[in-house]
Amino acid sequence: MPKVEDIKQEIEKLSEEEYRQIRNWLLEKDWAKWDEEIERDSAEGKLDFLIEGAKKAKRQGKLKSL
Image 1 (cartoon, rainbow, N blue to C red):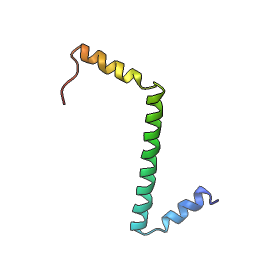
Image 2 (cartoon, rainbow, N blue to C red):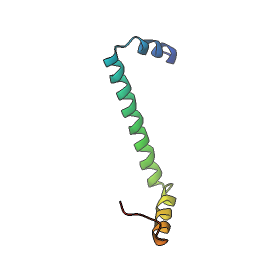
Image 3 (cartoon, rainbow, N blue to C red):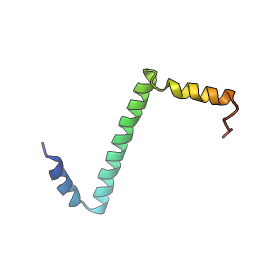
């Protein structure tokens, strides 16, 4: 398995188009992991404090309509 330094060196050799492709692939992969984490945290109730905070702000009239 190539080491990170080897991969970095290979990335440096890419054309602009190839670099864009790998960058976009990595970004999509990163966002997918983030989405999975958010879904897992939500299912486990770790984000319930956000809902409660929004409900409290609404009761206090602190929310603005979009």
